[in-house]
Length: 64
Image (tube, rainbow, N blue to C red; front, side, top):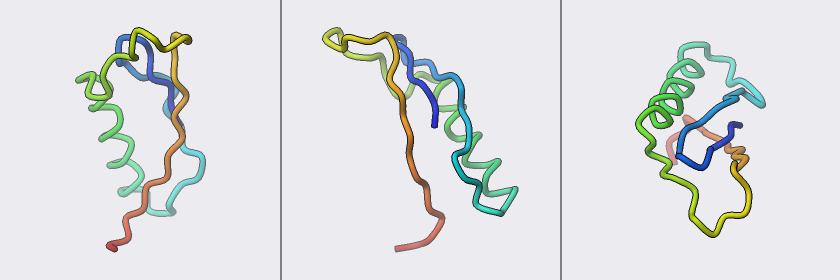
């Protein structure tokens, strides 16, 4: 989970539950951190009342 701020930056990235594979978890964390640095989540819309958006997501390395 993490917070997206009005400018598209992220903070407070943390795992709700780890996969058990340290390398996989580290890579997943790096992807989210890099997306935040590049502001790839985008700024929050002008109509968004709060200054932050809480995001909780589940990522699976399983191929579908």
